[in-house]
Amino acid sequence: MTDAERAALAARVRDEFQFAWSRYKRIAWGHDELNPISRTAHDWYPPAVFDMTPVDALDTMTLMGFADEAAATRQYLIDHLSFDQDVDVQVFEVTIRLLGGLLSAFQMSNDPKFLALAEDLGTRLLPAFDSPTGMPYRFVNLRTGKTSDPLSNPAEIGTLILEFGTLAKLTHRDVFYTKAKTALAGVYERRDPHTGLVGEQIDVTTGKWTNPSSHIGGGIDSYYEYLLKCQKLFGDADCGAMYRESIASVDKYLADDGPAGLWYGVSDMTTGKRTATSYGSLEAFFPAVLALGGDLDRARRLADSNFKMWTLHGIEPEVLDYKTMTAEVESYQLRPEIVESAYYLFHYTRDPRYLDMGRTILTSLVQYCRTDDGYTVLKSVVTKERGDRQHSFFLAETLKYLYLLFSPETIDLDRVVFNTEAHPLKATW
Ligand code: DMJ
Image (cartoon, rainbow, N blue to C red; front, side, top):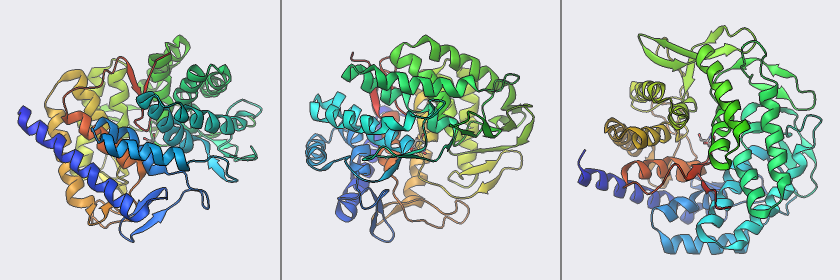
């Protein structure tokens, strides 16, 4: 790919971001997300609104150079965002999207009002950690601190340390770091003593596993990502050791390496026995983590499998049986993970195949998911039937990673750590 072709692709992604953002603004401004087919808005926790799309999209527009739009969005958020709301929020989602977005807004703008908003939100989330194990309940009421739902999972428990840790460093309140690290280590300490694997569901009041299914997909995925990135961002050697130990088990029991390429399937955490050959659009983040962790060989081979999954129907399914190459769950949710992996692989290898992958993915997105009023999810990648949601992570992650893949390198991955919602964080402390 020539430099001119790359530049044209970056410009195209920038245009598509502007399109998706403008339709959100036109139809769903003042709400969390856009439903582009019904031309309606979606709020996560009505009657409260947390401006999910503007918070998630803000650092993407900043990186893309939409300076005036970013300034106006920052002002809007400062004037309108309030977390003093009587609603039960999901700790994980609010942390990765809102807390992560506010912290990157603070680091990019140096406006202390964003740190104040982040500290207010973080403080309201803290009661979630008051369980007998220190692992957080899934939901907490932002006004009363009342918690609910003890049946959680490694991803929701272990994907908090980057945001709470950054908040701790920036506010000098260690409590945020300590609580999130205790939670993360709580999952690790309960790994199976024989296989070293973790399961899919755990009761945070008893510390007992309630579902022993082990994999790298939804419910577990970003637990591994945060073990590694905790070491990168904070220099926390415990996290690095936990990552290395965990990934050895994952490679031993979950990797499925054969003539059809490298995949990661599902096994029972106690026996290590294979129970399913499922892999999907969420699992596609794993090459990025492997590359960041230094295992470029597996990262490259798994990124090739990602691309096979994408090209099977011209766009990836939510879940694929990689043995039969059939879609088990046919939807596509505008997910970013496959692009995230292409971006990391290109960064570390400079192999142009990842640019070509990015171009194919962009072309499919435009062909199948672009509507007159924004981008939408698909109900089926086989029939290409459309659903009705422009998720905030499409602007936070999918378009950001595509843009970063094609644009000249501006991010130093030795200094910047992306949270799992692609909000860049830096060790400025
Ligand atoms: C995002 O909210 C985050 O990337 C999360 O880790 C997984 N789900 C979505 C994107 O698919």
